[in-house]
Length: 191
Image 1 (spheres, rainbow, N blue to C red):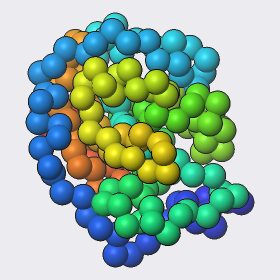
Image 2 (image 1 turned 180 degrees about the vertical axis):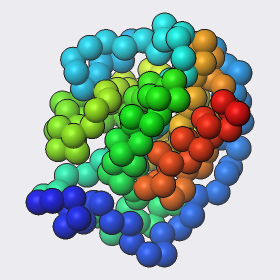
Image 3 (image 1 turned 90 degrees about the horizontal axis):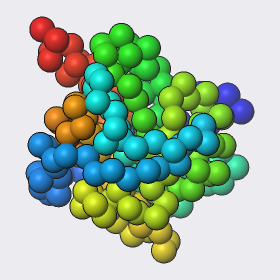
């Protein structure tokens, strides 16, 4: 199945727009805690140790798989739909983000094994980190929601610089335009 025919790539019209509930107001300026996370490349990444350049960490609730339909109630949750389009937006802008001095990581509470399938299928040039045990989520008090017995991170992006959170994008909407939004922000920072 190619990307254009993949239903996970399309955002339905009329999705509820997430509102800024202040759940990320505490993050800018925080020091990144030292928490090792497994990546889709079978590496252990500690974001607190990444101190050269900027690090973009986009957190998303969960990606689906092309062989399963999106549950209808998923689309009713503001900001839930769009994890695959967001990852593809980050992929499509990856080289530009790198040229602006940033490294990129995805982040979700899904297992590394689940994430590996998605990363390979979408041909992501960057690693995705698993916070399956919610260690980073709890340490930073990231906003979450519950769905079908899973604790999922609300869609947000943290920009890290010198081991601290410099900027937070929250809420992120529409998710399929987010890579471009970050590129524009990085260009303004350079100007």
